[in-house]
Image 1 (cartoon, one colour):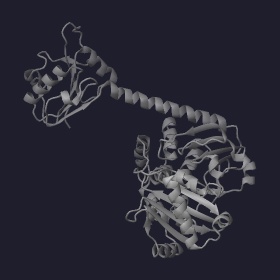
Image 2 (cartoon, one colour):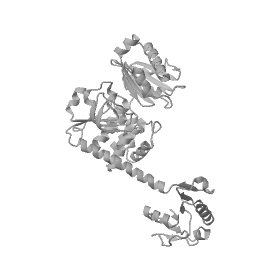
Image 3 (cartoon, rainbow, N blue to C red):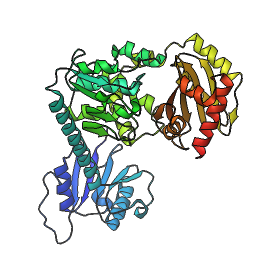
Length: 461
């Protein structure tokens, strides 16, 4: 390892560098400016002949050494780069300046430019972000601490993001399962989601609206009350906490509401809470949050913010690859494969829509088929529909640069059922009774024609 040779333009910038905190392997030098005090900045020594190859040579640069030039003056930087290039032509150079742009710098085989005060500003902004998240956690803990029993509520058929966030919130609040259970109106159904709760030992209890009365408080994570229909149960219209990354909805009350639609996952929000309080993170929790971010952003490829990337990077160092492999490779049901085969035998892509009607299937098969359906040539939308008990359930996927899937689904189910979701993925549920009243029957071809027409109208409208 070589040295870092820091060359500061004048005493002011040298003192700034010293206040930032010099590293042990840095050689600190400064070139005095005319008419400024010759008082030596602490820890620095002056380059007596300034911006010359002879002056640089006195530093005895060796192979592996690196230079940093700290200046806001383009002529100074150009002259010093020329001197370094003559004295140590192998040496890489980092220019730190907020006022000199890259196009003002000379040609050099190994040169980078970055900001100086702007880098410090970024660090300060990050710390203020941590401070804001710390305040949110303080408020959460103060609100929840007096409650004997808190229900941490997830969406029906909870997804990895919601499961991870419920688990993280419970740990963040210092609660155990009996005093803060994870609850949902629908059981965990998709194979990979069942594999997740089994591998991580997370229990999600299915409850009825009436059972919510046993809780002193409710915290909703990765979901808002409006997901439960136009007239959600009275108990979820006024809750204690809502933490979510979906578009904000009205029609309910929450004492604490932290909704960030620009984030790709709610797990990112909980990760920021954890970092702000300095909470120790174990492999199970890290793996849950990593999978939550990964699944909701399709491995940081869809609707991803810089905060998602930072959270994923932070968690990755703590997660368990072995547990993650167990979650991501669940067993596929044979009846689902048979239903997929029947649907694929009679399917086409029409006006960019790939519609697969599966018949009567397990609900967890439907979103898996929708994921696969988007791979068809020419498909901008994939819709997989199946009959589950007394409902027609459909999952929707799109390529991401077309109309938002959640908006389209809400238009399709309006007056018939419920639905919603993200820009590129969504879900809808229509009771079979309501479907028959409008379309006459629930035969496969009737479902296909009705959904295709409805989605074409919604997408184009």
